[in-house]
Length: 594
Image (tube, rainbow, N blue to C red):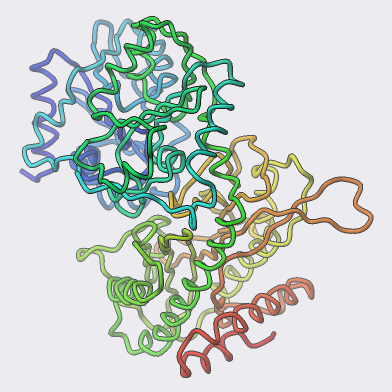
């Protein structure tokens, strides 16, 4: 029996032993993280799906796998369709699916440490209408059957120095305390791992590619804070950096502390989007007054301070030099037919590792050759590893974690020559990229209001792409950072000066090729004479050549051509002093004016 079938059978056996008729398996962890530690990859272990967004529902006689448009192809490659139905989000959801399948009297299990309160309440209502019940489990049934499940890491926490953080701990404690007070609360739960890291100026290695430590924190209106993590992770340097204002407690004492706040009838600020159901349940059962509101760290974290902005500019210069050296190498080696997707990934990593302040990649690189490039969040493996072939496109989406900034960049290149269709599609993607890069918009504009700018050139040809156009990016933190986004159905959070977003329109032809052009951009004030309103715009941070072999110049307006030429001037002027002579000569040709 294949291993996925064995694991599904084992789970069903365990559910039956517990008197459960089904179980919901999310991708996330106790902090509602997008990327999770190895110990929390239950969905991957059970189904084989390795994407960054998805979930599953297992019943006694059926099971379903839920993914969005980014993973339409990947889920079919990784998850056995004879075991799981493929379900597309947002057209459906685990809750909706259960609402159609659950029978009266059935009990559907869920782990209260892995779902939001909103999801639990909605699903309970849906099941109740069917005469079924959503039941919280005390221990996760997958943990019972996962014999070699990794243990949570105990790697040491590191202080994040003020020279990179820009704002010291005491200032963050004070401003967060003031936000808690304004919300009408006595304390706030800080549950998101990147918020804890930002709040206390600490970093860790508990999650691959994201420099965070597994921890919860509490902020109080008097400027104190409490950190809950494994004591073994706390070094003398961390204790010294946190000082007397932050008390340190074992991670497993967090639930007890919530009960104490409840017993004291404290008013506790909790973010329903970043905090799991179990936290709400612990507080409410003990008598606390819940004040629902946004995590007080999220917006200050998104608005980068001057030191963080300077740092990310510097990080992008070093990252751009590494990527440019890689693109030069690729230009020489790829046409030989001996370079594979995994070879390219390893080569770019080796070049980034030579850069100052580099600590890790910011996510597993997406290296898609030919038809693999059409899989939006494809990740090459020994089983799927494909050589780069002349006449095909190669898409590489990658990034680095530097002490002073986080990068994320995508380039699509032609291996040898490219066909007319590929040049047309690439140029339409480029036109959309330029439209967003050059946008001016009034203060108060949200990302969803800008999304169509990047899609219009594709729409005019009856084309589109099934992912967002832009996500927020942290400062030596998460490569996907909220609350700002640029997408069709994103939040109404206005873009503000200091926020960093990606600009990444794309086009994907299933079975043939994928195209994406991604730079990171910084929101900044854009004052001009005659303006009647305060306006904002973008500064492009990423520096790396865009493949001119794929540009159909006749499709560009004079203004678009000017933007591309100006961008390439910046690239060569900034990077030429940082790369070897042979790369410099190649770069001069790669950035030649149109």
